[in-house]
Structure formats: structure tokens, C-alpha cells
Amino acid sequence: MSLTQKNLLQRHSTPVVQSRVSRPLSVRCRSAAVDQASSGKVKFNVIPNNGQWETGVPPVMGAHLMASGTVAPISTSSGAGVGVEPHQFQYPGESNAQVVVYATGKNAAAGLAKSVTEAAAAAIKEKGSFTLVLSGGSLIGMLSSIADVRGIDFSKWWVFFVDERNVPLSSADSNYKGAQEALLGRVGIPADQVFAIQEGLTVSQAATNYEGRLLSLPASVLPRTADGSMPVFDLILLGIGPDGHVASLFPNAPEAAVTSGWVLPVSNSPKPPPERITFSLPAINAAKEVAVVAVGESKAEIVQRALEVQALPGALPAQLVRPSSGKLRWVLDSMSAQHLALEEWESGKGFPRNK
Image (cartoon, rainbow, N blue to C red; front, side, top):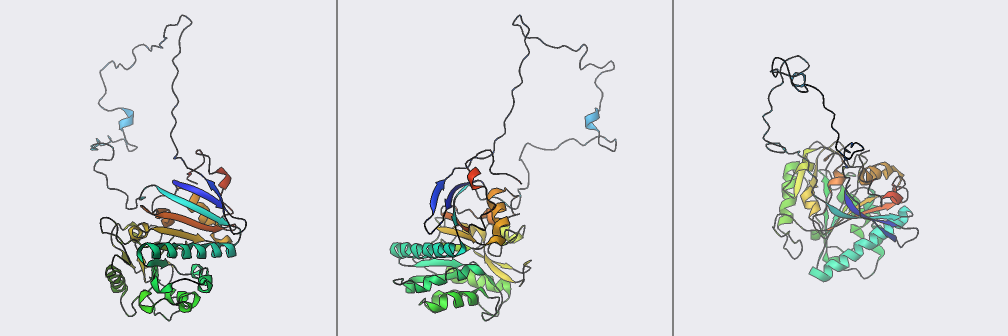
């Protein structure tokens, strides 16, 4: 990724900071030298009758013929980039990223929980509320220790889900159910401030319903971007799948190319269950802070690909997570970071690379 990255290598509980500024790859041209005679005069090699034909310029030259022998059609291009359909997936621009590597998964969980409580305290002090957006899977379990922290005003927390399966809330596949068991059911967040998916709707209806409930929140809880088009959540926590998907935005899926809307329906997820709702990338990138969390050896390959290999736009949705004005942080442990060449990140020649 063409990101300004800071490598944080933790051996205990306090990361050691090593900063880095990546430079984009550049094309180097070699200048042709002019051969001069010993007299100091420029010497030219002249080929007699060069470029002349006895019967005049031929109507078709070899390079103008296709393999079939027919004449190649004349180009109708109006110029480079003129009249060309843009690729449906576009990188949203440069972004700053911070990579935090903890010695163990346990340390990573403690560090993540601390980051959440610090973000909550800052948001409540600033605007009187804290908006937290959760993902499913093992990430929820990493936050369970928050329930044991004293002095947190959970009455000012508002909790949302960056994606959710269109299943009953009692289902084992429900992200809401997992969050309730790991954390939400153990703290005093008011029930009407935990935004679960509405049961019993089609997936399209569920996405519309969820977005409508977000739109109904006042700016004191959920501010908007300057143009009013997107919500600004205080903190979004994302996991990452082995294929590079985040939320329910999968590689090369049309949902990952959407440029408007807050919540989208997904009717054919490659990962079961097939029906889900998900935040759009513009909604994710409008957040005040986004953290991508990946711990364990099973995440090592995709972490290396996402952070060190420049993929085609859309091939790795995690690379499209680039907050427009907020902060981006990757939270790793030593196992998930084992294939990263952190010591080489200072080299502008080595990164980004394409393999």
C-alpha cells in the first residue's frame, strides 16, 4: 500500500515506535550519450538513402498489418485518458497508517481494549457520546476485558455493527449475539443504543432500515462529514478475511465499488450465510478512526499481502480502507506480522511492490 506507515514493535505492553515514510516507485530513464570524435566534433552515422523508396512511400507498412494480413484500423483515440471508462474500483487516495505489532495475541487484545477505552473517553469529553462500530468473529472476544475496567460511563456508548448476517439475533451466526455474550451483555449500555439488525426483513429491507435508523440520529451522537453525505463514527473496528475482505465487502464484488450510501445489502456473499448487510467503503473511510485487527498465524499471509503488495484495485478490499481525514491503524501480533519485512520499509526502492 502507498501509505505513510509507522512500525510499532511491542515486546511487552508498550510499543516501541519506528517511523517510516514510504515513497512511490519511480521510473528512471537512461540518457543516451553522444559519441564524439577526438576532434571534439559530433560524429553522425549516415546510412545512404535511408528512409527512401524507389517507387515512393508504400501505402501500408509492416507494422500496420495485423496477424491476419489485413490493414489495422485507424485509431479513433482523442488522447490519453480521454473518453475512457474508469475502472469500477478506485483507490480513494493516499492515507496515513500506523502498524502496531504486539508480542502476543493476549498483548494485542489488551492494547486494543485500551485504545477503545481511550477513544471513548476522548469522544465523550468532546461531544458527550461515543460511537463504536464492531465486526464479528474473534475480534469481539478481544474486547471482553473492557467489562472489568472501572470508571467507564457506558450510558454514553452507542454500538453499531459494520456488517451483520441477515439471520435471527439468536442464531450462532449473528454478530450481535456474539457481541452480547462477549461484552455488551456485561456492561450497562442502554438497549436502545445498541443497533442490531431488524429481524424478519428481506436483506434489501434490512439495509434500508439500518441506514434509516442511523440517519435519524442527531449530530450530537453521529456527526456528518462537511458535505453531509457520510456519517463520522468515532471508532470502527474491522477484521480481515484470508481473501482480504473487510466487513462484508469481498474481492471484486460490486458492493466494494459503491461510492454512495451508508449501508448496503449483500445477497450472494461467497462466505455463508449468503445474505448480509454491510457499511459501504465511503462510510468506513469517513470515520474518525479505523482499526484493522489481525492476530494469529492464520492471518500472516493476508497481512503481508495487504501491507506490502500493491494489488489491483478491488482485489484486496482491505487496501481500499483509507480514511479521508481520520486515522488508520493495523493491530497485529508477532505471528500475524511474521512475514512482514519491517526492517526494509525504510527503503523507497522496495515498497510498494507488486508481488
